[in-house]
Length: 328
Ligand code: 3EB
Image 1 (cartoon, rainbow, N blue to C red):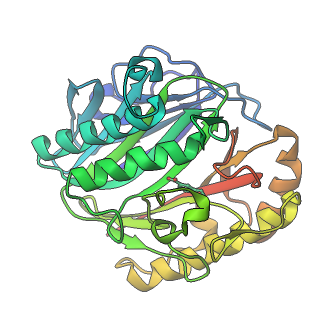
Image 2 (image 1 turned 135 degrees about the vertical axis):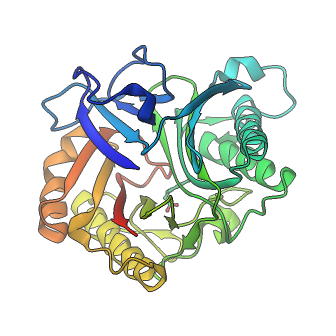
């Protein structure tokens, strides 16, 4: 599998049958016939108003649409996108976001079981107003209840072998979840500097988030490291509140710790910080210059895309995710 980023308006560079799926950063949905997660947000510091990220398969893909999930698969890997409008869950006994979240994850697990690619590797979660409250509970916490309920209902377990993930707030739009899954289980990676998110205490919500700090996954001939959205959290506490440069340093210390931990488990040799392809989410677009300076000081000249989005804790200003790939 090959990953690439191109300016949004550019023509698709290869035969589209080989496109597994991807994301459109900054853009509204454009008509493509592969699963594409549209992330409608501004891209601070980018000359392009949209960037397209594409996963290319080594072989032609099979396409499908099931239960509202648009997906494509090769023999070994499946990528899908599901978007659910919360208004369609208005009559549910649960909050609409909780109900939509549980429904989305249940549908994802059903699809993966049916396709014989049951191992969920990486999930990208976006929702409107993530820090807003409704029904007496912050919306991110509502999402966490629905997500965890689906893992438990589908007999997945909600600790240990859970996917790498990110969860961000956008100005509006549906609950949007993209995911990558495969035949072979991911190797989950935790961060010794942080309490595992699935063990966060309940001051952060009635249910813990269901994700691992990183995952090593193994498509044919390859080892990919997916580092989850990472923030300025040590133990389980938010650090450097109000200080975006301090938060960025702490976040990168966490990412370096996750890379070191992944390297103990990797089968293709050490991943080096300079290899990372990063996405950085900024609560305030104007922080881009400060975050970029710290990021380049610590990681060197890596590839990074900035997206204006809300981090899931109201006291955090920046979250960074990353990935890297080795031949195997
Ligand atoms: C954190 O470490 C910051 O709920 O899926 C990062 C990555 C975060 C994923 C998720 C949340 C999620 O808790 C927030």
